[in-house]
Image (tube, rainbow, N blue to C red; front, top):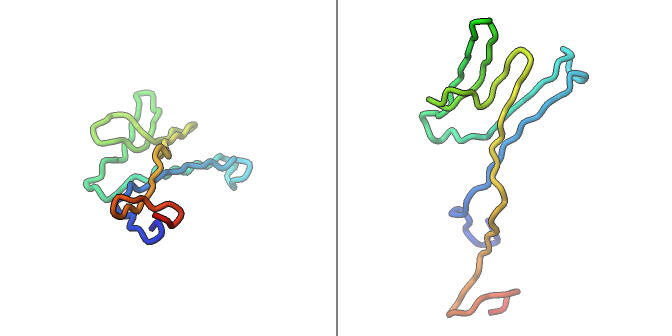
Amino acid sequence: PLGDHDTSDLPKMTNSNNWVVSGALSESGLPLMGADPHLSVSSLPNMLQEVQYVGEDGHRVIGVSATGLGLLLMGRTEKLSYSMTFGMLDMSDYFVENIVDGQYERDGVF
């Protein structure tokens, strides 16, 4: 809420995150990567699916793809991992104005 004003109809800000821990700090000695794109699960069926590709030479990649896309948005091989993040830029500022009888309130005065 913004003061006494209902802000439920204003756009919601959402972001995501990913992080990496150096192999020097992990028990295995290998780096760790975590990814969380904060995608909404309220729109089911889910648009993402887990996919694994195995090449004729035995190389494999596993990750997540958008249904029907055919390429991985986030994934890993034995030597590489990658991810995406989802972010909303702060491109708009919202102001709530009180207007009574055509007069605007400013600093508590109309």
